[in-house]
Length: 328
Ligand code: PMT
Image (cartoon, rainbow, N blue to C red; front, side, top):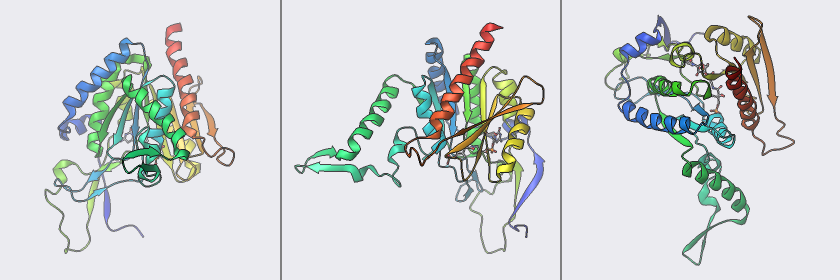
């Protein structure tokens, strides 16, 4: 039976009408200024820059928000990948959902690995780290300190889908100066439907009047302007496709490439995403696509993270993309 509670409207916003009618987040200008400084610094150092988006966006139901729609993403893919991009020599703009996982601190999540559990008090005053945790903490801490001292990691946060869309456009306009040296790694799980501000209730929606019907509009597909307008077709753009029916992964990935004209879609199935993904990319033959599976064996090495192999493959492909423009 169809749910009686949410209706999806036919109305669609183009990217242009979206930005003309939905207000920007209040801190956007300041955020953009910091991104500009970061990009300029690394552009002049000749370093490649990657924008990693991570975590899920929310869709508020009221202007004074009490309720909102959300999704499952914890930000593991994005936070883990950001660390491997730093290792691969990239400067990283990490644009993530507030309170989702972040590079380095992800190793000490309060729910899976709380750091208070491996701290000890000696002589009633000194704090030390348990023997077992010492070496891994030292490694994480050294990488964290080194990334911060060198100014290689810049963090931005979003909560709503509206914050995300405004930030993505603003950051990509700043990254345009990088040309082919910019890589986009769009791992965030972005809502497909939203409530335009003009249709939102100002105050908390009241109960007591029977079932709730909410009509949601489609979020514009911003990959199209991202590829062709904001980055002028220069940046290397990787989007992700999440499905729960594995047979849809490759057809949906191909469809996205045909529609938006970018370089790679990484397909992942909800249940197997931590140990296998598929890279789908266009070939030189019009309308034909190549698939490359990346897999890890957790039973062979439980510490191995698939993001290490994803990032290694992408860094190679991105370099080939940069080199191909130097040859032509
Ligand atoms: O965070 P984890 O728990 O580790 O989970 C990681 C992940 C499964 C969320 C991640 O690997 C992933 O698959 N992210 C993309 C989820 C997805 O399917 O997004 P989508 O179908 O809403 O969008 C597909 C692509 O289109 C995305 O890359 C997105 O940037 C882009 N998009 C989305 C919405 C929109 N309005 N315009 C877009 O261009």
